[in-house]
Amino acid sequence: MENYTYNSLTLQMEGLRVTETNKYPIFLFLLLAYMFILIANLGILILIWKEKSLHQPMYLLFCNLSVNDVMGNSLLVPRVLSDIMVPPSERFIHYYECLVQAFTTHMFGTNAHTVLMAMAFDRYVAICNPLRYATIMNGTMVIKLTVSAWGVAFVLVAILLGMTIRLNRCRTLITNPYCDNASIFKLSCENVYANNVYGLTFTVVLLTASIGCVVLTYFKITAACLTSKSKSLNSKALKTCSTHLCLYLMMLVSGFVLIILHRFPQYAEYRKIAAIMFNVVPGSLNPLIYGLQKIGAIMFHVVPGSLNPLIYGLQSKEIHK
Image 1 (cartoon, rainbow, N blue to C red):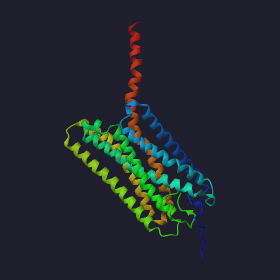
Image 2: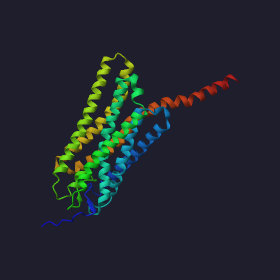
Image 3: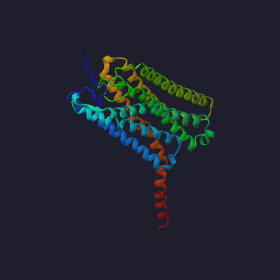
Image 4: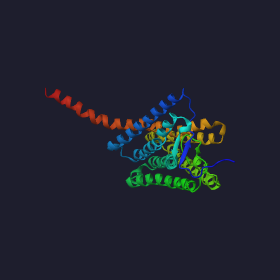
C-alpha cells in the first residue's frame, strides 16, 4: 500500500533534469537572460518616467508590460537557477512559497493578455478616432485601463488558486520546474473535477476575449486604413500597430506551445523548458521590440534639444569674434 504524507508544508521540486556537463551553460544562459530582462525593462521604465514627452497613453500602458515582466521573472528565474545547481533530491520548497510562485506565474500570463488588450484599445482609438484621441485617452482612462487589466487578472487568478488551496494534499512532488496551479492541485488525492473545469473555463474565456478583442480591433484599424487616403494615417498605423501585434503574437505562440506540450506526457522535459521560455522569451523581447520604437522617439526629442544650444552657441561665438 502506498504511503501518503498529508498536508506537508515541505514540497520537493522535480525541476529540470540537467547533467554535470550542461547545467553550467543552462545556468549561464538563464542568468544572462534574467539580467537582460531586469536591465532592459527597468531602463525603459526610467526613460519613460524621466522623458515628459513620452508621458502618453501608448507608452504609459506599455509600462505595465515591463512591470509584469520583471515581477513574473523575479519570482521564477532565481528559483530555477538555484535548483539547477543542486541535486534533484535536495530541491525543496515551502508550500506557501510555492503558492506565491504559482500566483505570480498565473498573474504574469493573465496580465500579459489583459494589458495587451488595453493597448489594442488605445491603438484603435488612435487610428479610428484620431480627433477624439486626446479626449478619450486621458489620464483617467489610462488609470481605468491599468486598474482593469490588473484587477481582472487578480480576481481570475485568486479564484483559481483559492479553489486549489481548499484541497488536502497527500503528495509532495511538484513535477514542474516551478509551481503553478495544475502542479499544486495534482498533489491532492481528492476529486479535482471542479478545478479542471474552472481551469479550462478560465483559459478558454481569457483566450477568447483576448484573441477576439485583438482581431476585432485590427479588423477595424485595417478597414479605417483602407478607406482612408491619408498616407500619414497609414504610416502611423503600420508603425505603432506592427509593434503591438508582434508582441501579442509572440506571447500567444509561446503560450500555445506550452499548452500543446501539456497534452504529450512523453515530452515532459520539452514542456518544462517551454514553461520557462514562456516567461523568459517575452520578458526579453518585449523591451527589445517595443523599446526600439521608444528609444527612437526619445532620441527624436532629446537629441535636438541637446544639440541646438551647442550649435547655436558656437555659431554665436563665431559671429562675435
